[in-house]
Length: 260
Image (tube, rainbow, N blue to C red; front, side, top):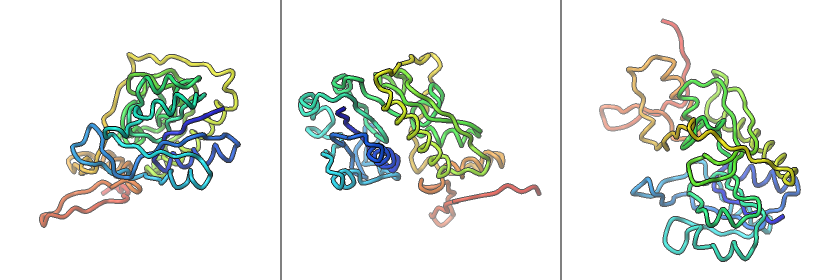
C-alpha cells in the first residue's frame, strides 16, 4: 500500500514512527518549516510543537518534500508527482494547511486526518486547549475522511479519554497521541473493511485558532476558569500570562486553587 504522510508536529513524529514500527510503509512525507506563512496571519507563524519530520524521514529512507503556502511550493503544486505515484491513502497528521479536493481525491481510500476531539464537538483550531479552557472532563480523538469543510468529513474511528482536574495540556496531548495511534493502526490493518460514517454537520461548531496573545489572563474571572486557562496553555505552548507596569509579561506555568 502506497501512503503519503503530511505532518510537521511532535504528534506527526509519534504517529509516523508508530506506523513504521508496525510495518506500515510510508512512500513520501510532506512537511512544513517551523516558521511558515498561513492565510490567517499577516506574518509568519511559529509551530510550537514542531518536529523535523524531514530529518526523521530521511533517516528511514522515506522521500521528503518541504512545502509552504507560497507560489510554486504548495501541496497543489505537487499534483503531478502525487498523481503519478497513484497513492492508496493520504494521511494528514499534525498539519496546518487545507488539502485541496483535487489532491485528496487522488488516493484510492481518500485522505484521512485525526482531529483531537470527539467530532462533531470542538471542530476547528486548538481543540484540546479549548476543551481544557472550557472545563471539559472528557474528550477524545476522531479519525475521519477529509472533506471540503472544517473537520466535517465522514468518521472512521473515535476513542474517548478522561481529562483529570490536574491534567495540563501536556498530559492531555499525550493521551490524545496514544488514542490516535490505536485507532489509526486498527483502521489501517482493517482497511479492506473500512466504513465511513457521515457526521451530522448541523451539530458542528468550529472553534477559532489561538495565538500567543490569546493567553492573557482575565483576573475578573472565577478561580476555576483561571486555573483551567493556565493549565490549557502551559508547556509546550507559550503559556498564560499577565502584563506588568514596566512593559513585561509574567508567564504562569502552573497554579493551584486554595480556599481563603
